[in-house]
Length: 269
Image (cartoon, rainbow, N blue to C red; front, side, top):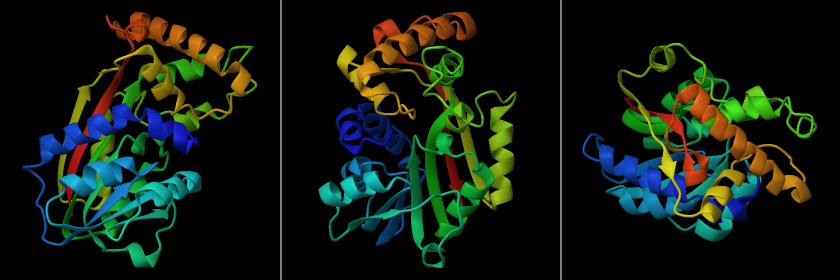
């Protein structure tokens, strides 16, 4: 998750899904003229530049933000331009005054499940929007890989490198009513209009190489390079077991499928 080059090479799921979600909600978003757009958790900057900048109508400037400085440095080097810039920002920490009320539209794709302080993060998103601004957010609610993290954290071979596993699991993963939990958070943040969709959203990779690379790019643990391929083998074995025994998923990792359930969230200030 800290390797910007690997992420850039393997983020086909994020790029493809972001384009799909944006197309789906294109008619609902209340587009503003000469708009300022925010991409929260922009990673390497490829979605910011190649999806948002090219898809948002009447866009004056897009700003990508991410907590990871290495990702932002990569984004600046490869995608920054006169109308696309990038900043380091922790969405769940205190918000700088210069970002308050600055954006007409905010987007975030496959990032918010990493954020444990959901209330603070959504309040920050609300505060960064202009009055009448809106946001579209897609993130993971439940995923087989989260269960696998917990299991491997108890494994004698891998427990040395898998620490603080709860920090890397969606806050909604074990929620009895994930939709209601999220709704209460965003309403408390101040949003007046909310649409929350919860859907199973498996993603099938074209090849084994893309599947392994895509999963490897998001692994948050410092597994030594010489052990990483073995770790992935064990991870995929556990994911398959969880898929079958807990979720009754017919398609699983041998077919290069990443099984998860997704929140799609559209909100207006």
